[in-house]
Image (cartoon, rainbow, N blue to C red; front, side, top):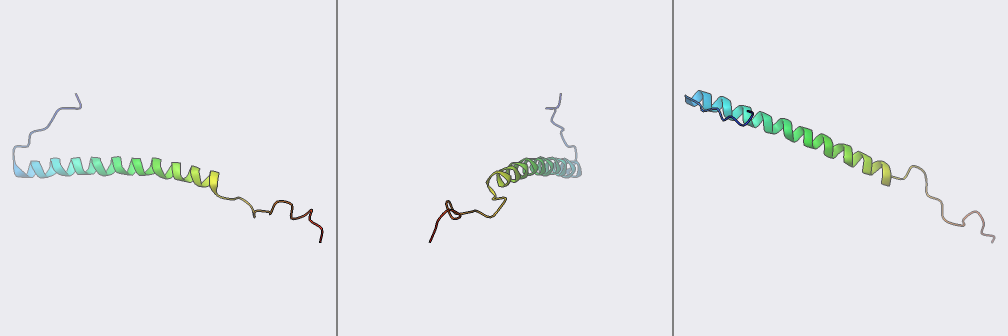
Length: 63
């Protein structure tokens, strides 16, 4: 029964209902951003170098 649409009786009720919808949308957007940030953090952990890269064979070459 969550799909019940409230019908405002006055302009003030309409304003309040519109504000509730806007607030719900902002909360949902915040939740989506939290998920996206978690995924980005995970990608950064995977692809960010954890140490200084070493050239292959740099220690074995004789001059």
